[in-house]
Image (cartoon, rainbow, N blue to C red):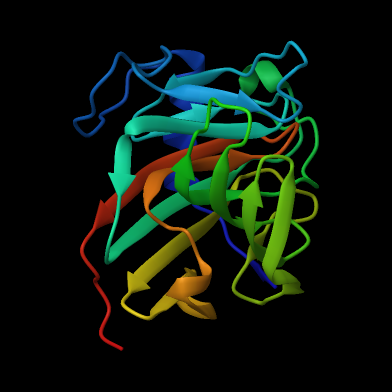
Length: 227
């Protein structure tokens, strides 16, 4: 597995957490405040829970808390499309300063989200973990079907040991006609028949319990790869 850091990025995020002014790209919403319109569904929705999600340019920061789904209802796609998200996993540390309380739970993207605030939400998850694995699954309510079971892949970047900086992973999904291709760090890791996936719907994030994550982008657009 690969171990990768982004020291310039880390310095910028640490500065934001500590309240130091930094140069940022344009993004809607007030820095260090909950992004307007975003919603959260926690694992075990009957339990009271709270997780801090804030605008932190560039992107958003999810502080350690209960696991769940996070999404902006305006991020919706159907037909042929591509999604790209760059996600940084922070090492264990003070949760108030963006440290994770644990780093062994999965995180990533979900696509095709429907009825996310109802009794039986449906979505497809594309997740990785700090053990160097990925999985793709179709979820309906509390049930799920693994379309690509947990598998180790060198494309997944891990935290260093001992970890002092976050690690970066870039997840992409290309919904292209009869096939849907899943990428990590630019490498194709799975190709599944689109007819087996329900991909029309909301696109958002999955964040495992205790993880501190920074997401710099959730790009949704036309297919960008030649196959």
